[in-house]
Length: 163
Image (tube, one colour):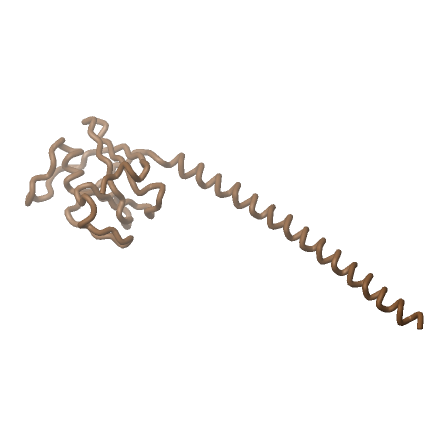
């Protein structure tokens, strides 16, 4: 009869040990998960730091364009199409507005990036004309003009690019 009493007790102890081992495993897994999250946060901070260091610079290959389209869903009837840009990099929330400055002529213009290009820095003809001459493009005029040389760019908060 004694073995009938001892067996449930032994089974209870075995279950308790299994529960403790299970709890220990959960705690170890939780600690590993916290370590992984910490590593991801560190990597993310490093990427953001790199992005901020590349938030301005100089470019020399700015091309004027009259027509634009957008693969990111920008409606041309809702924005100022005279102040748009295609840039080499993908558009995201941190680089949707870029200010171009012709440092020689002390003129700058904020542009809304509506898509990315295959390799050039393309901007609306009106913005290009303003940076080059200080005057807007006249309606119906052909794209004319030489390269402006180096332009300074700087990413701005999105509310700096008017719609």
